[in-house]
Amino acid sequence: MYLKPLLHLLLILLLLCGSFMLTEKTVSVVREYDDIMIMLKEQEKKYYRKPQEAKIVEDTIIPGLKGQQIDIDKSYSNMRRYGTFEESLIEFIDIFPKIRWKNYHDKYIIQGNSEKNMISLLFLVEHPQEDSKILDILKTKKIKATFFIDDQGIEKNMNFVQRLVEEGHEIGNAGYREKYDMYSFLKVDNLLKRRIKQPYYYCYSDKKDEKILEVCKNYKYYTILPTQSLDKDFYRIIKKQIRAGSIFLLKDSKELEEQLPTILNYILSKGYQIEPLQIHLEE
Image (cartoon, rainbow, N blue to C red; front, side, top):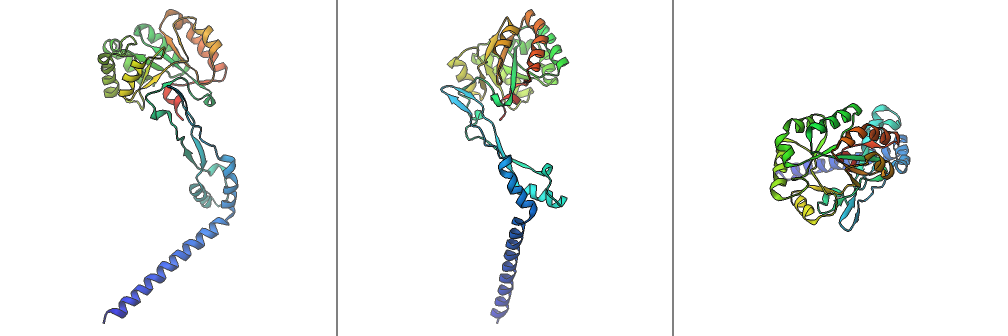
């Protein structure tokens, strides 16, 4: 009794599905022959950039670079609304490397990617009153850096730490006088992760030290092995050693305070960007 109505309904549904599929296929075919789509496809090769894998050599790593390709669907949709091909409406999809520095807490980061034409300045906080003058110089030049501070510095100089945060600088963990025993490391780590939100956290070492690497790895820190760690002759050495991707650690001194404006002017005059580690290491 109900068989015929059910068959009739089923037939209607099949016809509707077939019609929908045919319409969708027709739209897809028409889109492929649209002048906008043809021109977009012609631009794919021009804008494609292959990702660059991070370079790992034994226990060291240098970040790679992300690539890109045109997002055909979004770009086409943008231009259809505009009514014509317009290069400024092209949108892109990031292509990330398969080997990414972020996945390796057990390697020393020895530099940034040289193709980014950036360098980083790291400062070891030892005398916050004097380091405030360093901050004044950086602020005048509108430059952000990464400051490594130990458990004594954090405990006794929260106003200085707060200023670092407010002025957009990064803060790294220097343990206790650059020694990463568990107590001092965790003391700084607790404050950083509880009160100072950063996407990444860093340790540093002047030389390869498996104990430092192990402690920092266990707490998901990245260990920085600077290109140069300097406590004197700052300007002379930086002028001689600088290259794209360099990471210089500068230890507090009266000489540093006097030379820093000249150092910054020299670096900028050579066309380098000075960025904190977060930006410098980003793919």
